[in-house]
Image 1 (cartoon, one colour):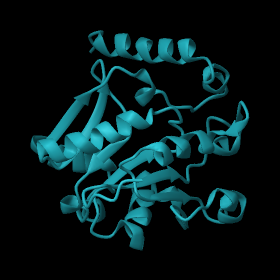
Image 2 (cartoon, rainbow, N blue to C red):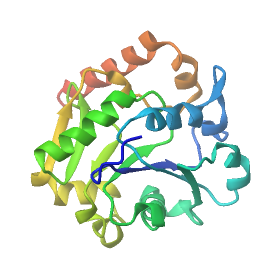
Image 3 (cartoon, rainbow, N blue to C red):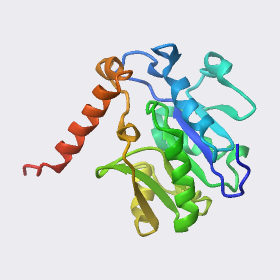
Amino acid sequence: MSTLKSDPVAIILAAGSSERMGDDKLMQMLGKKRMIEHTLRAYRKAERVQDIILVVGPGKTSTIEPLRTPTVHIVENPDPDRGMISSIRTGLECGWAQERNFLIGPGDVPFVPPEIIDQLAKEFVTRQCKIVLPTYQGLGGHPGLYSQEIRQDFFLRGDQKGAREILFRHKQDTVRLHVHDPDVCFDIDTPEDMEMALDPGARWARVDEEVEAKKKPRLR
């Protein structure tokens, strides 16, 4: 891994309740690996990521302990019912995240190419911005990369609309990086998503449908 001062720590959010899946989706198998293993692999293979903080729900550390490594750190969010912002705060409170830029990515977006993560890190330095977000044909994707300068905003804001409050506050200092890989937008929420996950054509088609749906004017 790189050791550049600008290299970010990655905060992976894995404390959700998986309500639409009916089970702990991140521990379900996708081929020969669990979903969360696919997600972690992308960040571990990225050259510009030094450490990964995996935020899990209360009592889940023992289940996911085999995934801990010298660079993968597991922490528990004691009250994930407070929303995703609570998991972000849990990750940011870790010693590994202090005074460092940080990536935020959901655990259920498992196929982000490591090259795109590195591209975000390079763009962040080149553009000297506070936030870099990947987009695919106008559709927002993951992960986002944030400057340590706005770390405190995640503690002062976000209780109502989560990270969107921080994004709105810093929209003038945000770069939206257009990428050509729809996997930055493919998340897994339902059994149907699980069925198509290992078929690139199927999951990319679903993302393209979301792109087209976004282009249609909303009825009032």
